[in-house]
Amino acid sequence: MKKRTNTLPEVNFSDEGPLRHLHLGTEWIQGSMLIDAPTVLFHEYIQRMMAWLLFVEPDSVPKRQAMQLGLGAGSLTKFCHKELRMKTVAIELNPQVLAACRGWFKLPADNARMQVILNDAALEIQDARWWGTVDALQVDLYDHEAAAPVLDSFPFYSNCRRLLTADGCMTVNLFGRASSFARSVEKISAAFGADAVWAFKPTREGNTVVLAQRTPTRPKREVLEARAAIIQAQWGLPAAKWARVFKPMLK
Image 1: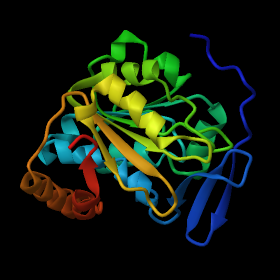
Image 2: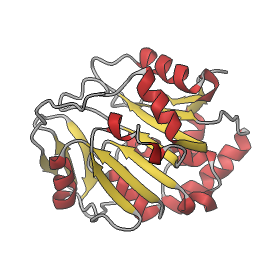
Image 3: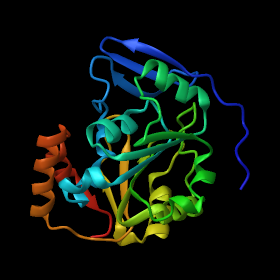
């Protein structure tokens, strides 16, 4: 697979009251940060990208590995690294995005538990060193037009599945004026199995977060609710609401 060589968009930011937004040369917001609370996950869809927490024991989280495909404003990378204390790696194509996150969005420098790799995500995830190592894979890949996912194919999602540990999960943000939720879910289901796919209802902004498990399970509602209570108390995420609006696609 050839690396994408299209001209990368210019990166800039804007401040709106307590918020700082990342832009890729357009008015479309690619990510946001509360300036006085840089590790808080502000947007509802970004919070929902953490729904994989419902499928693991909370005390196991710091022993796990997270990977983000697409750095955005660094929100998920910072949260997994600083709040969850996980080993975390992000794959980002645009070096300007990394510079912006370090300069404007308080992303730490690479260290023993966190690194950012500048590469095409489609290529990086084909490196065998990552296969079977990722517990939480978070996919949020949009270009400057925010029209559709940059990577949204059966081969791509098959490669994503190969990254995961036995109880690992992928969460993906599906949003865009030109994207088709049904077609994306069909590809994810083909790669993971229809019984492995869960989805939220869309947010007010139109983002739908879909989760796919490496190994399909159906935790009992009381198990999900108990974990949601711990997640909410320990990390401040609205997980009690997740349990109400998050369902398996295949009943």
